[in-house]
Length: 263
Image (tube, one colour):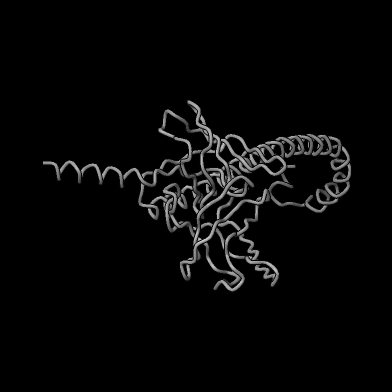
């Protein structure tokens, strides 16, 4: 061993012995390595299962939040439209929410969450961001019932925006259809004409959209044309509406002017 240490005479022998012993070492270590591989595989599998469950849970939470954000975005868009509509009205308004919808055969009514506490009154006009919806027919302490313009018992003084031709828009019981009455066969009207409120009767604000002419039927044997209007208001979609006090400011101005005149 001393001679081999200094002169390496047994190097070839050691190399040969190492070659012979290596298979034995491999066989001896194989169970240990297999056990370690199985342990690592099981641990990795369990970690993957735990991580998968965690990711599923996070995905569910994120999906729920995303849906909520989308709902808030749509609601924000509706409220912005209502705000723009309130500026266009230039009158006292109040936002109300729908709490019930009554759509029985030939009956179109909704219930809003504002009543006597907020100053609601019978006949008060209700609008949305796109057009006139109807008027209040019953006021309670905390809620009000609104008769929609599509109800067969509802009539609304209107005029053709293009030429000022006046008529009456009557409900049909269908959510997407009004009938324009009192227009003779030779009336200057066209499909697509915008119909607005005339303000006659001092109930609805004048110049607010009611709908567009969708169809005109002229029968030579009849005195008046049959005109179908598609409402501008989103009667079956709106969640928020505007309560309007169309003549309150006018009355205040008149009373103030009268006081000044007496002084």
